[in-house]
Amino acid sequence: MAKPLKLTMAPGLQKYDCTGCGGCCRGRFAIIITDADRERIVEQGWTDEQLELKGKPLFTPLGSEFQLAHRADGSCVFLQEDGLCAIHAKYGEPAKPLACRMYPFRLIPVGTQIRVDVRFDCPASATNLGRPITVHKEDLAELMKLAIPADKAAALEPPPIFGAVPKTWAQFSRITQTFEQVLLDVSIDITRRMRACVNLVDLIHRSEIEPLSGRDLEEFLDTAVSIVQEEAVYDDLERKPPSGMVRTAFRQLIGVYGRLDSVADRSKPLERLSTSMRMYGGKGVIPPLREDFPRVTFADVEAARGIPTGEAALAVERYLSVHLASMGFFGMPFYGRSYVDGMNALLLTYPLVCWYARVFAIHEGLTVPDTSCIERALMIVDHQHGITPVLDTPGEKFRTKFLCEQDTLRSLISWYGS
Image (cartoon, rainbow, N blue to C red; front, side, top):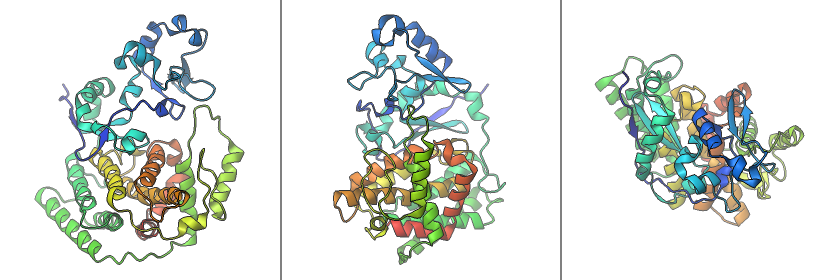
């Protein structure tokens, strides 16, 4: 018999309460439903009682599964004019599909633990609105029983740390704590901390870490943290332009992260091709990557904007510390990637966020991106990171790996983070 799973919440400053904005119901997601969800919704009799839904499908097939049906504009068939869910309004929150009840939380199996991650594409989580997320623990514990069978979670093997080098879940937890330690050292600015994390990845990757365990691993990690923190203090943060090839690849990745594919959008190949070509060229005005995208030039974004400080830096810390604590940045929750590959990809989100924050700052006439600019950028980047299948295609995997080479990633962090 499998041991009971332990739900572990991320500590820190992250907050969340639903504000009823309805953004998650307006076609940004395909809501996959379980068999139990489908039976329950059918029994609620919506096609009989609601004139608007009479004769219309409540579900549509999506591969071998089913999703909630959507209107022509992409919004969920159960979204009311007031922005609230009709199922929730009539039958209460427990009657909603499991996926809807879970958002913006993700449950990450880590051995006999289930760790809680938070998606920052939700405006409430990105802007840190509501109560501390720990108040949701009891509700999430109930959802965990429905979403994750204990035997399957416990049987999930950890991925390699890199290559074929194995580590246990407990060792991954300890290694992740070293990155949290570097990230949360507020005596150093956020951009230098991000470069220090890149250096820490490199130290781990280059070291003979496979045989290390117990006290030997502890000593290695303590020494590694001391080295990268000392280097960060004396890091001159040279703002040297990345090569043309690097910036071209980075702009194309920016375009991928900027996509906002709607359920109602049946793909616009010519429009996407045009946008991709303009991102490749990097000249003139940036193409509108999504609706209401600011009209800003590529050249303006490349100019120095300063290091995020104060509440703006704290927003980045919240984002990264939540994802680190959840351990959802590698393995099964992140395309099955190794620990090192997943960590590098997470660190790459920093220059991506800074790039988008610069766009919003320029549009608002700000010299340095403020907290609002950073939060809007986090919503864009986290909507795709680890979620969209596009980032798991061979071309995007190659591009991400290229941009995550140590010197390249360090240069992107300096260039866009200062």
